[in-house]
Length: 440
Image 1: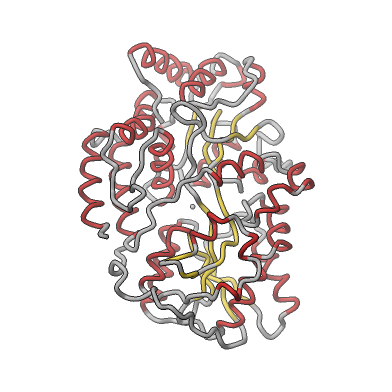
Image 2: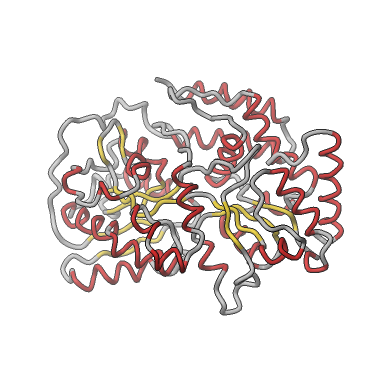
């Protein structure tokens, strides 16, 4: 995020960085849609018996509890967890390999919301009749759209996600700052004030996720969207080589250059950043809702329990824009017991299961009513800013060749953050690359 805007701003920023320095600181794809996904009639979902769920590493520790609840009442249709790596890119790759082999090893896929177009177009997942999902209309509409391709449903949203700003409320209060920053400049000013506190020794100003993986695509998109830019416009055409996009990318580039974002953050994925925040190394941290429960643990694993607050992401002139995250459960086209798989998906997407999950993990639900549940809003004060984050979120490019598109974004952003390529050249090259990948 842009931490210098003029000579005066640059001077102030270097002062912030110096203060902290002295203190010691969610593969190629197929074709463009010709391989299917646009059929008018949904196939019959038949077959009953045991199934599997392919899902990324469960850092919450609660997923098996959810599966146990299903298994207890379905002794002949039990679900087995096939746990994939923590890294989203690796998860997607394993799911694609399974599909290309036409293997029935995975019945239900826990898919990042941006994978729908690719998996549906390649007929790796099965269309789901909307009338077979009784609670679909009770989910946040934006989450339902993530599960559609060519207006057909290919998944059911089980969790949503919006980026949040975690911040050390205790240190801001001690520095005389009453509210969380709404802009990048306000965040820098807060860093400068807090850096003068003895308690800030060893802290850095800010970090998100900057390793070359899907999290970097998210952080890149949020920086650009929060500066008024886009990666792909409303007509589906690449439009990333703009002054607005450059301003957003420069927020991140200048953050690394001046030291407000620590050098170590170039290796951060979600968990590395979470641990840094919980260890008291960051004043501000961009991450997903799941961090809330873990950072508030009182078992000694978090040094910031009870000391932090949650706010919307900051932007250029006001609150920023989150990338829409979350996971949809889809049925593999090669699964044997598709009827059981659909029943299991409806079970996991139900209000009861989503409420049970948020109570244990703080993960964002897709069920709209839970954001206004009095008991939950009391337990999780972040629900109000999270709801605003999700409602105002922008999707990452919804394209069939998503794997190639996100790889191009990550390469351009990573080279810019590492000062290998100037931001304007990185964006110009990315625009050319995206034009070759995204066709109408």
